[in-house]
Image (cartoon, rainbow, N blue to C red; front, top):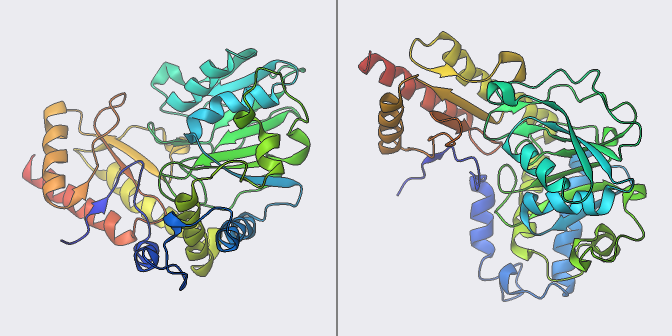
Length: 360
């Protein structure tokens, strides 16, 4: 069976080259007679896998030496609690709520301290990024929190908020490694890898060392202390060995293909093909304000629920999978991550043109 064009928001499309390499290694990794999923995480061979993955990620993002790279479990959702548990040292944090995941992080933080929403775009169904140039950031706030790319609503911070000197923490799950980042502008960035980097079940967290507390409240579980994971090289317990291995292959794929500046250029080209069509179409319309559009997640609608459903059904039959939009937005959503080839986006637009002509 031929592979489909998979527009899923996550778990999402992976580079075919990486999948073929993983398939070849499945039974016998580098002549050791077993696969990575069967290997002891305490073995020298596995240590090499995780060390190389970290080194390659550091190279891709130019991560400074004073930042720790942690490979953690529990999904991005566990970070909603770990962040306030570890980093809310004054018991105060300011959140910018631009979508469902930022809202969930904000609600979780309220359990552990005084969390305040200093800006929100909920008034227009999160269809834009609010002006964050002069927010009421509190002088004693421990950090300012954002979700940089909103998977569900298709918005992206194209300019980081003015945090007035406070530490910026960013959930980058759905834009991770889609373009270069200046890591030093953040105290911490983290992301679930299942959208743009690897299989589900792993979070990569990059944290400036001075933010990691020596001690936390006695009620914070051992497994939820950044210091424990940092001191043990992400090996305090058995890590998600398979996911780290696949991510390592993706990091090498990205480096081989020119790194993140080349990836950004390609992602801009892909997004332009789809957005240009949406802007000219009489039937399909994008749902996001132009200056807030994501390069990774593109929601769109026809304005007619029955027509939307017909489009999703016919698109699936034509080999375009997972185009149904999130229930909170409706319509359609195309997630066009790094591994989505430009041909896939062009084929989708060609199909949309055909559908529009046939359903006028």
